[in-house]
Image 1 (cartoon, rainbow, N blue to C red):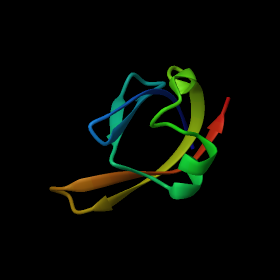
Image 2: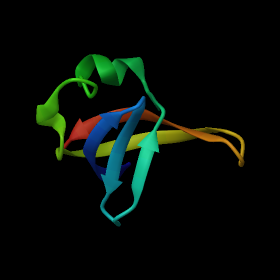
Image 3: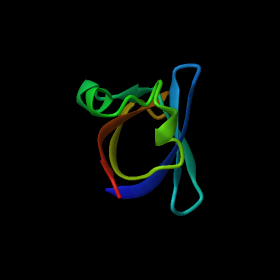
Image 4: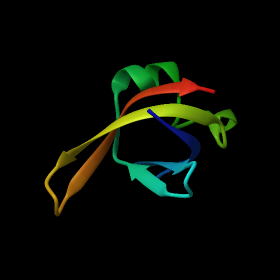
Length: 73
């Protein structure tokens, strides 16, 4: 788990900024997470810090990042 702030949902990507300054855009979020947090529509979640767990799928040339869990801090 890492710490990241949710920044936006645009053009099908969920963007988070990590504690080390890294920005990562996720193409997928587990349906269970979206059921718990409406990241697509709830503007009050912007800039909220979460403990985030994610996986990288795909291949080296075309990685796909998927959020597996979020826990607010």
